[in-house]
Length: 183
Image 1 (cartoon, rainbow, N blue to C red):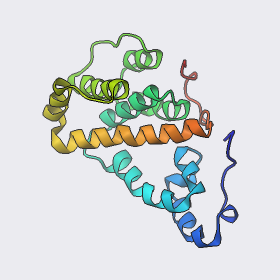
Image 2 (cartoon, rainbow, N blue to C red; image 1 turned 60 degrees about the vertical axis):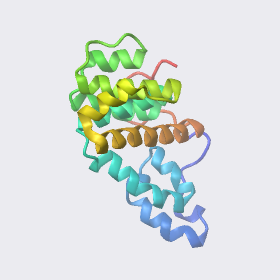
Image 3 (cartoon, rainbow, N blue to C red; image 1 turned 45 degrees about the vertical axis):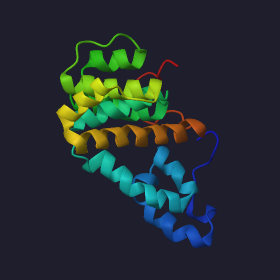
């Protein structure tokens, strides 16, 4: 981290060390954007359950979740999240053509209906801060009310993580899978 060093237990006030210990063993214990939240241990403690739900327990298929994360990462120009999820996205079934076009902000290839719904919802929201009725209806028809809310929250959560990663200049993961995003 260019702007903040990795926070250690001794760096936080004594009254927050129990919260620090609780989150240090989970996703905030690593080196990604969640680890930055340990600078505010109580906030990190409260964030971890939502992270676990949107990332691991949501009713959405893994391919949809990974595409949503990549869409948010690209919209936020977040090098860390993009590179942390691009290989996972490909492994979940996203085509190289889709991933490369999204990365390079090129015209997207023909998309499956679920992929089109995810990308449209994300791009519309991140561009206009709204989602058209047609896009909302497509998402609702494909994923149901629970799924469209989970999709929306997933992208919002990853936008928050991207904001954090970009604010502290987190950079790229140690295991960089692809070239940096062109920004």
